[in-house]
Length: 456
Image (cartoon, rainbow, N blue to C red; front, side, top):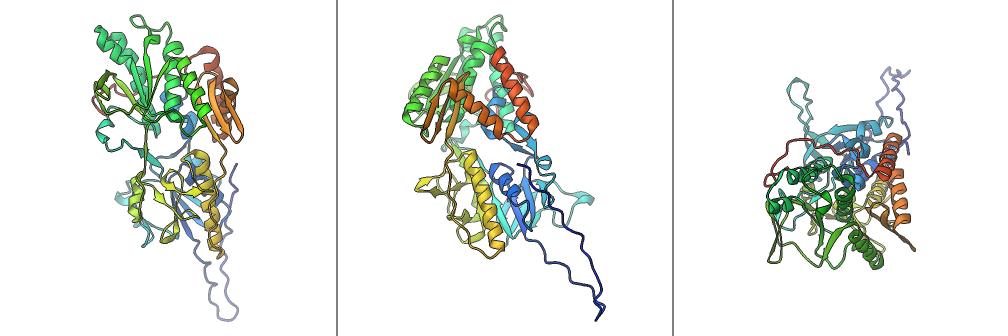
């Protein structure tokens, strides 16, 4: 939906016929600072398009990212611009918004200030280049990877949260086949062709299924010394089943569909260690040069600067209207907020973040009219996960689908929710081509090929 254009009328100053003094300037518009250009932050910003406020949207990057398709960039199905759009372009018609590309260093909810590091220096620096004051604040900085206290695994098992992560992971996945092609030692070659995805949630399932498809179809007949189809793709989940947020029957169907694609699914099996040579399951060491982390998330470190209690994942337990306890004009939304609706935790998914963003905008608009904040109510639109070519699972209310029909439903839903006509058209054309040819359009290795024992 395109945000409505709001144009302020020019201020007119006229002399009083009685005293000759100028008319007073209009009252200052309330300043809303939004941290994070993801689903929650962007949807809140657009919902305030017609409100008498000035908005500063801050993000460390210049783009909005459609995270549900990030794994498609990592597996060379789509290029980065297909699932991202510049924030300035998205908001170009919304005149009450200023976009700032900057790193937020800290928040003082009592003083109502946000400390920035935006690189402003020299003659062009403004007096307030590193500090903003606000009347209302929305913190929607999202989440990062969580290794459950084993942060030393990060260089060997990268996660997938940003475009930079996706491009780094794509390089690792494609380079593994190149290294295997050049390797003469059978054991080392097998290690290069061994892939492990840690975590059986939607991201892990989607990565594992797509990687198996690449090995068995996309790379067919392209190498001379290896058979890519011999690659071992293993999905490892510590819990009793994959896709634990789905009904058990769909979880079981997903497991069978993965196995049909050639993915080895291990459940009830936590990983005990990861290093440059592979990973450990209990006392068993498994040589593998490519391990991907999709098991856990942690809230942005910015949450700690609010000075309120956080849960084990670093998220803020917000009030019913998504405000921060003790600070009614400071809000947290998206993956960084933890809250229940109808007695159930609100999941960290895109539809929930969008609804939270819109709700915060509604509460802010109400506050300016003197109204209180209404409780947030989450409307569950269901779960979708793709597994591979013509295989997916869908859980929406009483409708539970799997297989080909679910795959088409998943495809159309994701194309529909992409921002921008160009993105929708390009993604649809790329997927159509991939369907008929088994090829993946973005199979280019970018950047330096670092060894697996070094980050990147």
